[in-house]
Image 1 (tube, rainbow, N blue to C red):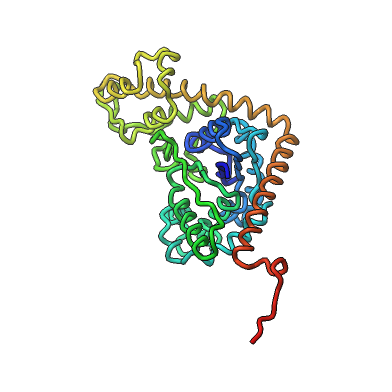
Image 2: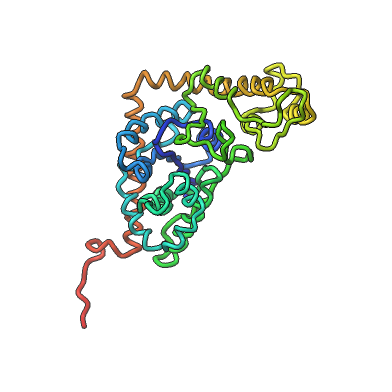
Length: 355
């Protein structure tokens, strides 16, 4: 069996630059590499309902936003399948079966779930669907027999949980499911991009994001409002790099060629950092350079998005065809799972056991 990719995003809002450096940029590279037999990119609307159950309109509206962001970044329907999670009902059935393989205590130990429960202020009023969504993610991954899951660092506990489910299922029912591997961004700064306010994570709900669809002015204004070193009051003051959001973004987005391209007085980022640390380099100059770097990345994405916005029927057709391909793949996996679990009763032939 060839290599297969599965990854996706929750349609709770437009995608931001954290999604881009964390996974989207790499997805396009992998799509064009020719090394993968199939690539499935999921718009996880069912998962989005776990903490938006009372606002289904929000989820529906953002399905198209995510699809537009996908295609604007360069995902090509001729090379990959973009699909809507809830339409593939096999995923729900797989989730139900996998629930028998995971203990409540194991779910409670998942650090990603714990962090998101705290962030969303669920406390003791945790929806069961939200609490068990690592199991749902395992169903998503295994349904497509994914070998590779491009994702951010925060998804590592989810992949570990999925691998445990695969091990448990295969040990009980025989070799049926494929064990996936996570593919993290190679650039450490891309593992979890902070928000522009310096918070640990860029989050749509907090509103500290630069969106892929933001206008040139919006990107500029957000960059110039970024958190830097609070002790760096004057350009002559020595500055700190650690925890300085502007330099974290430069680590994630800038490439060596940018320094000559934008007429920087520095040959590379290390030289810029060194000057900032010893004093004599102001925050405005650094932010100006970051703005130039990010605008060149986001400008073509904006342009492509505007073009696709003019042909929504085409985008809908892409989702329909991608979902049909996803349905076919998941149905074949579910058939194998049912057979392994001896749930193919009429196929196998029901018999009355003699006493």
